[in-house]
Amino acid sequence: MPTPPAPGFPDVQELLERARRELHRIRRPAHGFWGSRLNLLLGLTLAGLGMLGAAVWALASSAPQRTLGGTVVAGVARPSAPPKLVQSVADDFVFPGGSPRLDWPSSGSAAVEVEGWGLLGNDGSLTSRSAIASISKTMTAYQVLKDHPLAPGQQGPTITVSSSMADLYGEAEDEDESAIPLQAGEQITEYQALEGMLLASAGDVANLLAIWDRGSVAAFAGAMNAQAKTLGMTGTDYTDPTGLASSTVSTMADQLKLAEAVQQVPVLTSIVDESSAEVPVAGEVSNVNHDLGHHGIDGIKTGTTAAAGSCLLFSAHVQVGGQTLTLLGIVLGMPGSSGTPWSALDAADALVASAEAALGTATVAAPGTAVAALERGREKIAELGVTSALTVVGWPGLHYHVALSGGSAAPRLTVTRTGGSSAAPAERLRELPRAEAARGKSSGSAKSTPAAVP
Image (cartoon, rainbow, N blue to C red; front, side, top):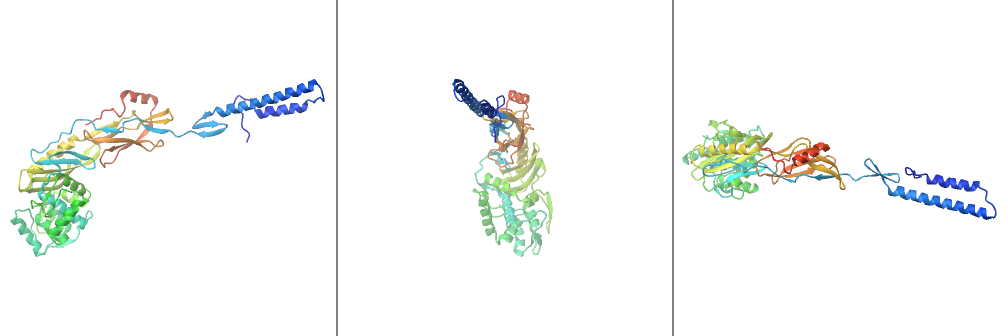
């Protein structure tokens, strides 16, 4: 295929063809000086034209012409390499502000976390073992639902109360334990039994469920301990399903793990959020957790014994920056040895309120701020920024990992809580006009932009 001449240069093939035609037109003399001179002249002309053609070819080969999206070399389009997406914002973002100010109990110990985000704070050892009273019934309910799962709205199997099971009520009363009346021949569903145990903290119903589930209280306690190990609760030892025994002990860290597991069982979270329920024989039973509805508190279990004091394992759902966050926490060892654990309830109420106040939003990148660039070689093609403000929810001192995703075709900026499992927000990037990019540079990048904390 003929190669088109480079712009501004004659067609070499055409010049050569003219020279040949001229050579044949001139009659060649047989002898003489002029004939030899003419041949010499023609030869020199052809040689010069050949050299000119070689020079033109070399010039055309060494001077590529730039086109949109590539180069042209010797008449052939060659595509450019795709641009490289380069991050210009720091990959670590720290939520600004001082340490969260939490309202800790005046005595005992407490801890609170944001589910999926991590520990917000603790007052007292997370790993010290202590009695947990009726908080133990949380694991009793969790184990029963593991063995006999219920979907929301289901009542589950019907349990016929035997005479030995009915005797559990008298035994509980003798121990000064919370209980609801049971009668031989009574029929109660699994769901109703769970309501009686969790709302009224009925120890007799806890033992009834243990016997129904595993045949004996001892066998059920063994299942509870196996389940605790499965959940990573290494500092826990269940010796009874009620928590009445002082030998049933756990740690705050372990109970927070159990609280996380409870959130994955909709039937269980639904029951602990009930203020009251109707059960056979006993009639209406009320929830001992009087914190329900305060600051989003919706569970989980109270506890009170002489060995454990006043206790509460709690959950709360709060709104922060348009997101719903789950607070999980525990209060142990507050004053009180029987009845309603008012000291623990009051302490948890204040702790949740302060935890909610400590949470807020922070801006990682504002519109108009350059956070990335498209580069080809050493040339910066464009600067990129977020289409709308990219904010995160958290509390002072929390770290986030900032990274690009999507490649140069669909670039995004993604922010992930460092060490957490919460969902990562992501924002699409757009090309910044030169004037806007200049303003963004003058006002600082996301690396140094202060966060807005409500």
